[in-house]
Image (cartoon, rainbow, N blue to C red):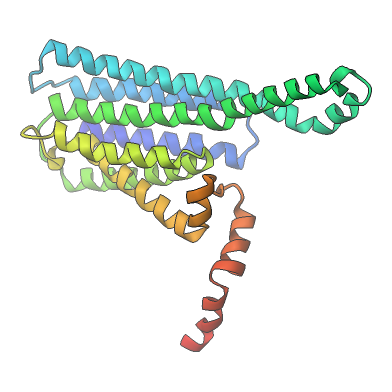
Length: 283
């Protein structure tokens, strides 16, 4: 099996476990910054080593330096987003859970002052912005930029060996799992428009970077990224049509997968109730 395909299999298996364990078990709040983020960073370095180990293609030092700088920038964006989201989320949750007490205290303490109230809500909105907006945007931007940098690296200096059937099976399965996890993550993080732009950018960069150099049949990591991007776009389209695309388009907030009960009610009671009524006649 191809070395990159093997690494992909191990990474996706671990990434799936790390991503789903908090949904099954009640893990401590440091899970994201102690386990999940370092795992992505570790495997980014592993993929770099695996891809450049053979180095059959030559590349100018200047171009390689620019690519390495791009990778480092992607690392910074990714980890900065995790740190910002973790900090702001804890403060925002603490404030949200104590709003009744804060309102009660405002009747007694100086918070009853209009200036103090304005200051409090300004702080709360800023914390919410760092938590649910900018924090998520930095995390997913850095993650997708890491995928793009790995794709460029492979197209420029990767091996040129045809993939086997086992390689294709592992790559397609890995891309499917990654696409599913990323779709859920970007919707939860309200990162849909940006992820669409970055996904389209993946295809554009692939066409530019692969011109006269390599094909998908010789580029396992690039094939994985392309499959993940296709499934990401398809998943967002299907999810948008199944929920409320007009609301998501004009208001900007997509219903989150964590709101599963509300989504199921909306899907059955509002979107397709009449169609379900015709189903017995068709059977």
